[in-house]
Image (tube, helix red, strand yellow):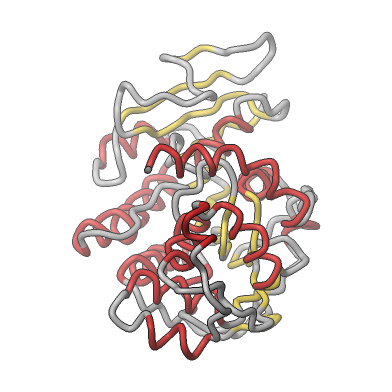
Amino acid sequence: MGTRILVTGATGFIGGRVAAAAATHPDLDHVRLLVRRADATDPARTEGTSSDRAGGPVVETVVGDLRDPEALRRATDGVDAVVHCASAIGGDEELLRTVNEEGTRDLVGAAVRAGARRIVTLSTASVHGRGPFRAAGPDGLPLAPVSATSRTRAAGERYVLEAGGTVLRPHLVYGTGDRQVVPGLLLLLSALPGPLAPTGSLHSMVEVESLAGALLGAALSPATRPGAYYLAHPDPVSDAELLAAVEPLLPEPVRAARGPAVELAEARALLAGNPVAAHHLELLGVDHWFADERPWTDFGRGPGPGFTAAFPRHLPWYRGLLAARG
């Protein structure tokens, strides 16, 4: 009999990729997806309990969320592994606490009671704060979150780690469906009178498909260890490479009107009254490089192509998103 797995956040940017990969995985017998709405749609999702392909795993949906104890009981009943991708990002702090901290606590409790042997959760490297981090290893880096989102996700991590589970901490996740990383960088660049002068900073990045594969691999691989992993392509991306890839997405009038390059200190002064753009400036302007090659050996998955090779295939989606936003 194959493994039975639960995926939370199964219609989200990352969780949807995990669900799709799980729905065609040969080693899985049953895939259960926790979704918040009965009308939620996803390529991996089927209604009720059926399989989309001969010999494939049964794909089942449970409607509910992390604040619903009965839904968590039904979702975890009989599963061998949990891949927890659901989270709240930004907004009301009470919602962040009830979803990211208390919801994770309750999910872990339900999974332990159900006898799940492996719990894997998606977190974020921002639980360590704003850096700079250069080739930061997986041991000894303190938790120092500065936002409510990061604080509550760090608090949720604790329950997973105490239960002997595994936490994956990516930094910047890009690809089709990304509405935060590249759009945020474009917002930053549009707020400056000229291109941002590179500082030589280095950044951990991972394509969404590679991250999803790692999450599923972590749930299934016998080599997965309890504790936290940083999850990024082994080759960090320089700010110059990132800027070169993203700046062509700026509207032509913005690019045509740009003046001389803006140094980091000047940009900080210019954006003092723009906290959102200033946040993205600090992400880009200083090192956020977390060095951890264990995922690509422990989880039985390779990292795939690096940023400069992988990013171009997502350009059509980003252009469509920007066109829709006007």
